[in-house]
Length: 380
Image 1: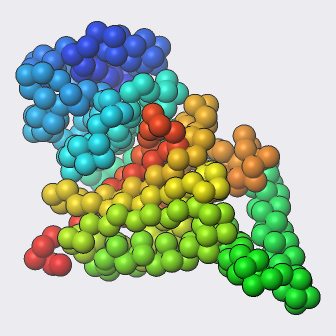
Image 2: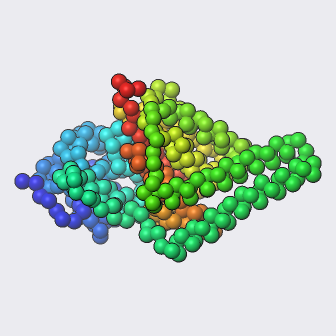
Image 3: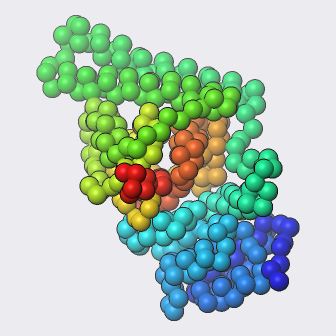
């Protein structure tokens, strides 16, 4: 008989006692925690106890992490799994778990706030999935904590930051236009001025689109117009739009696109907007002469898009707020962050049946990973 706990419960699977106990200490204040030292032991626990979330070490002796992942999925399709493994594991190795629909991947050493937030969201998604399976006609409440309450004050702060941001971009445009009209720049500086003008215009456009989409999302009128599409073509077009801004800051904008990608059911305008937001963030937080890298990969029936920068990274106390509306704006007002960009990235990607997660690589910066279901081959 499977036990059905009423509170969110987590199974920690790690063969090393140090990481296993550190994860337990972080989570046990908010969740019911059980631990297992191996994949085999984890499966035995799951035969007798229903859990909401499994945190799973990728590199384990005996039954490895991927094999354990697949076995758990065979037992319970509604249990969310968070992979926690060494940061040295390559993107390709990590992505082998993603076709099995890992909720998130978190690198060791992990940030406690990032882990708690990920487990909380995963537990709520597991609960919602279970309720929908058991009662398909019943309304299900939205994810607890998945959105920051949009108060009148937060809307006012967001509008103030938005106005400030737009003004800054237009000042750049007007300033360089004035200098060009006065022939105050030589040819080399004039070329950089045009890059700055074009980059600022694209940023202003992204800000405006973010506000429009946010209003549509809040009003329930965010409509998708999906069609089988080449994700690589979307990436190439958005990268082309961002080249002037990257060039003006001497940032190397790199692409490593899988030429064998199948078509994906996407709303081109929405996904372009989501990717533009990720690239805007990556360029904004990268130092001059830095690198921003975009990658696409196919793993079984899913498509992976990764945006990687080598900037200062993300403060631990901001990680739980990243994908919430206005969640980051209040904390980052000095950086003119409206807090809408990543909120819309998450909204758009999840509306496509996909998922988004963030990792903090040991060598600095951040990596955002988007996962989309591909169009079946017979429809491609």
